[in-house]
Amino acid sequence: MNTPHPVSKPVAGTVPTSTSLLERYYAVRSFTETLASRLSAEDQLVQSMPDVSPTKWHRGHVTWFFETFLLIPHLPGYEPIDPAYEYLFNSYYESVGERQERSERGLLSRPSNDEVAAYRRHVDQAMSRLLTDADIAFDTKSDLVSLLELGFHHEQQHQELLLMDIKHVFSRNVTRPAYHDLPERPAAHVPEFAWIGVDGGVVDIGTDVTETNFGFDNEGPRHQQVVPDFELGNRLVTNGDWLGFINDGGYQQAEHWLSAGWAHINATGWNAPMYWEQVDGEWKIHTLHGFVDVDLDEPVVHVSYYEADAFARWFGGRLPTEAEWEVAVADRPSQGNLADSGHLHPVPATIVDRDGFTQLYGDVWEWTSSPYTAYPGFSPAPGAVGEYNGKFMVNQQVLRGGCCATPPGHIRKTYRNFFPAASRWMFGGVRVARDLS
Image 1 (spheres, rainbow, N blue to C red):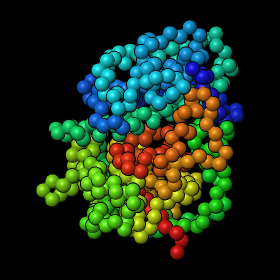
Image 2: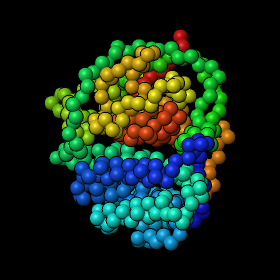
Image 3: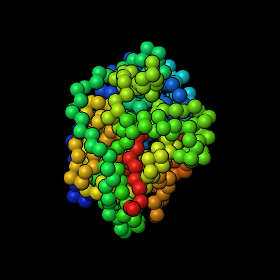
Image 4: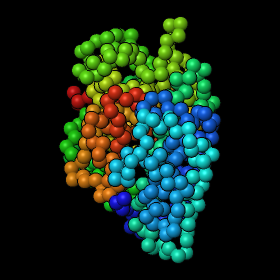
């Protein structure tokens, strides 16, 4: 196995202590177990489609990541609990070795949930030794800090995936189980739709990953782009807006659709967002808190890039570029309806910021018109970690802003999520833009 290289460095003078790293490690790891604790052993085995991974596999894979990239190379004397896990829990790292086919992860009735829990404890104990063993001076670990950060954010990515995936699993169950109870929601304050002008210019986009606490390699290098002045919707597209698109025949009018999108919806029969269903003439939606009426004030969610693009055209606009989105959020704090709110579903707008925008972060990942490609000067890190992002830079679209299942501390304005144009099971939604009139 090639020795992985870090993709980011801590800010000079802010290298964390072994104690703070260990506390952070256990905080991230415990949140995964909190999410999984609501599920039975049977729930955690199901794979409802090839894109979905079982909860048990997520728990094992994120553990394999720490074992493979930190413990085996850097903790003398470390012994894996089971060599078979190198095969079972590898995801797509070709340079590490062979792996279980993604579409067959649901066949892994063994190891059991208890064995996966034991695996997690085994690795957690070893990570404690790595971070606190007096025989390993902390100053020699400075090169490991970026790998630890990558491990933290990698597990947070899988926390979001775990929620996306179990939502799809439950949607295929005719008893319509709920993952959690719906918490009390704040009073809505959904503004009328309005266009807000945003100044462009020659702007800096992305992050220089050598100068920040953390950034995935695909977020850099920081570079300049020309962004003309533009207008952006003050709020996310709501279910009520989308119902207007449906009732106006949006899914039946070819003029709104990209050719590939039109072919796709005709092949699949899509006529509404994923998880929507008509019952006695009324629209309902499957959520993590059960099967409920569609709330017209909520941001629409679980729409593909094809649908988002078609809606934007029907609406008289377009999707923003990722550079436009990054300019629009400017210096706004990356706060919103994230996983720690407990809603795990988009909620109606409650706060309007100083410029009239709502919900720039959280609730739904916002589709952009930008293809997922490398920034100028990007090169993947050598070794296995270099496979993390770079090899997926084809046939995908960028989404920005985080969603209701994104863990806190895991989103920032330069974060580039990406999915194929037809994907709908993630929490994807829409904010429209247009050229300045």
